[in-house]
Length: 309
Image (cartoon, rainbow, N blue to C red; front, side, top):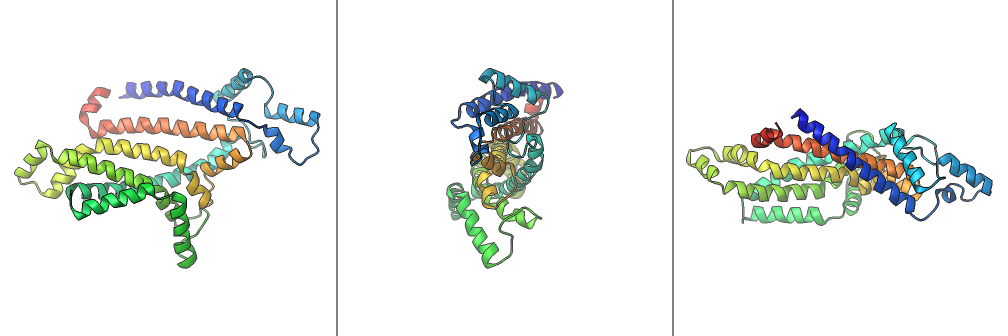
């Protein structure tokens, strides 16, 4: 197991290197000059512009700037914000926990509700319950997040005054954003759980367990769900990764000071180090998440664990 972890960690190095190069290249060749944005409306002179470019590290060729950027990352330096001159790593330390908190709450809710709906639909196949669960999954997949967020704000914040409309203070301010973020993931997990459970409950060992007199709840939860978890865990991991990097709309609508909102603001201002740092942290989070999922496979299925050894 330890050798497997070391091997996977070493494989992350070329992946992250490719991500860094691709992100830097895209930002480098994107039209526009950050100096124009920063000095807009000021009496800028060629000397002032050149001094600012030197301060921000925008001088030099593509190779020189890429080498400096990779060298800074190896030292733990993701650059500085063009406006506040604050290190990007410090900004991420402030915003990334909020994004993780939102994504974790959303995926926990999506997992519990989605798996319950998927199991219920599989057990009640071709009944009204199955049709109703399929309609819920379709609604969850097709409903725009910002539209649902606005509806919930109008109902629970303006009309009922139960929950705060914006901000991120206390557990109440987490309820609406987490629910809005979780709807798509909930639908995906429910559909995956249903299809995986349908494959399992048709197996011979399920028929044998029922013939031995095992209670239906025990057949479903112990024998069925335990063997159907592998694809479900994969789906949960994928959805969690998407929530970490894709909660931009939710953070923007609810004014949550997360990394998604930070990157949107940075993109508008052409604040390249902030955008690059945010993308790199998201990519690293996905690599770590994939490693955790692979380790979970070993705990779920002993055959996979023996392959790791």
